[in-house]
Image (cartoon, rainbow, N blue to C red):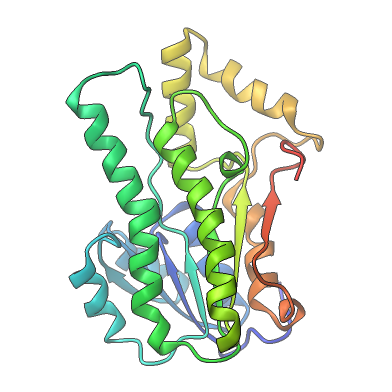
Length: 253
């Protein structure tokens, strides 16, 4: 996919060892951008070699680790905050484990996104773009996923806030909110929802597909890269503070 203004841009994509992040990073490489990818998973280095990017291993919630990566990136045109953690955190689970998972989801999805953005800002000038990965669950809710739902509502709020803060510096901030995409994380969620509700995984996925206005089943990671490329391109130079949903019409925006 070729859009104006992407060639030779320096792009950082977090959470890009697999899934949506890998697909987005590969699309920027194909568009002629210089791409850097970051993930906690050491597999990010193999992914980087495969798609023609530079890979770094770091937990985005670790300030020192992120600072070490930021020191290697003196200039940046586009930051894609895609790294995230999706786990079940039912409120009726009173165990310590649930609260630990809840804290970790917020730490990665909200605090980690903030840490990366703050660390990379010195490398960004006027014309820079920040693109956050939200979710349709940032507009609606899903039982038993309180931490994840809250975190994605927060990402949309941060997107609007940072757009106002960084607009005077010429930096646009937007978000992409994917619906159900066939990734490791989403399929894990389908499995735990099925187990918790006594349904089959096929029934859970079928319910999602039935809610979509456009037929075609669950999207695959390459199906959602378009909004990221658009928001980084010259075509979106006047767009900021927005969240673009891509969910085959599952949630009215």
